Length: 137
Image (cartoon, rainbow, N blue to C red; front, top):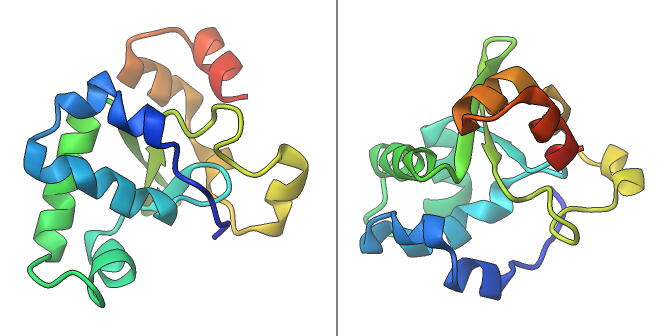
């Protein structure tokens, strides 16, 4: 996974994050680094728990991770989809300038982002495929 800085201003002023319960808001910044070079992670609550929570966050469980992703999806901050029998989560907004490695550098990382189904994402966002294609490149 690539290292990345988290854009504090974007998180602190996010109207979407405001719709997530106060208890879960801070968790967005905790799981965001699990995204690969294209803004995706494998969506498996047990795996995310093991990678992001098990060592440092007592009191967290895979069930709480699942509830977090449900809340983020309801706020349109995460789009979950299936590809080749696996579940993935795409962090919406990660495609904005400076949040991901340059496209020329992304091939160095394990990558699931290129499999985001544009038509499914467009339906999830309630927009057309052309608009989504322009936004996420």
